[in-house]
Image (spheres, helix red, strand yellow):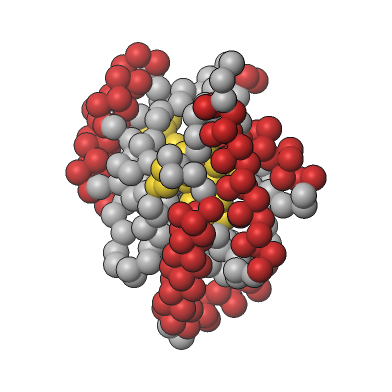
Length: 269
């Protein structure tokens, strides 16, 4: 970014409702924004899906101010109810949204190919791809995925995957309710596998991670999701894995760390 004299402007994404279109408008007007990287469906790491009203308004603002939206749609297939997820692209009559997705979240890593719906931007992107030698030469993998999709195996696979993720998420949420302090707030995900938790005010998630690593487990501390290192007392938890006694113990240990922060907060000076 610095090489091209560009800077990044952060927009807050509410853990229940997503971004505020009027804040988006303010940032666009105040910072001469030209490109916005947004994720409105099963947002990472909160799991929230923006309302269609929010998406429509953001696209309208982007069109009026000529801001190109790069929409990360990688987790839209992982919604628990299996319904059609809204997207910025579906509210885009003027080709101001370039949407990209991937099989990375639903198939094994070897089949993690991505795609881009670029409309009038396609030629420019393809020119950039070949100019920089980004042709992956993955024809065999593409044919394998095409066959998989053609036989509708993907539909069955996604149904099973959604049920599995929903069950694992519910188990994780139950454990969080059991082991974490009552003052913690969880962003209830509608899909995907990430759980976003606001810990006690005195909790330092980065410091807690260093302790966790010593006990051979880890999590994602909130500050890594902010260019200004915000969300000091937040954690993002990956609940995609099978629940074992060991994994449940690790989550309980994280809860103990949070309880410790509560004790320090209420201790006399």
